[in-house]
Image 1: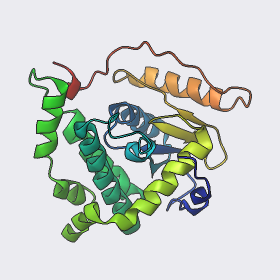
Image 2 (image 1 turned 30 degrees about the vertical axis):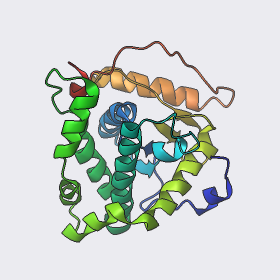
Image 3 (image 1 turned 180 degrees about the horizontal axis):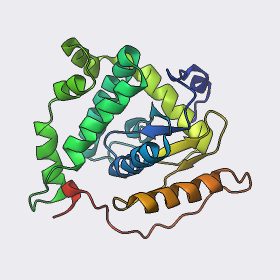
Image 4 (image 1 turned 135 degrees about the vertical axis):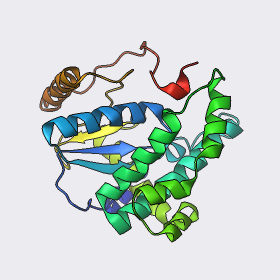
Length: 236
């Protein structure tokens, strides 16, 4: 992911400016949990959230096939298909349509019951039951929009926005990435959140992160030891 010129091709978001921009990959549980918090704060503070794309498939494309399992490659491909639907939703219905597709997808996937199964088995079975047509319907798009899932022409915008996320926040990062006060405000990976928050705690976290974003001298605060994600699909 060393290419930078494509950053210039990343589209401006319809309805901009936004208070923050959230770069999502639909297969990342960390991005989903953080997006729940972002929607919560947006509701409480009347913030405008712009939804952008970042592809775990592209972030991992330089790894050899030996380093990426067949199951992981299949998950990345499915994530790309959902991102294509998101791109088509934006083209047809604007930013709100992307929000609707992502919320429908994440709710069906990460809020599904684990049923006591191991994660890989549970995820595979849940994914097999999610109809992409339901995402199109959630966004109020024509039924034929589902064809976008296999339309590789949308990969250009997915790649451009992935590069934009890395240009803003730096290399060797995952998801989620958030830009506060886009396009020129600070961008960070995270925050990574283990569970849903009460409204007052959610706002406290937002204010803390936002204050750090406003400090030009601040760049990173991280720990790798963290609680497990409190998502039904991940809880046995």
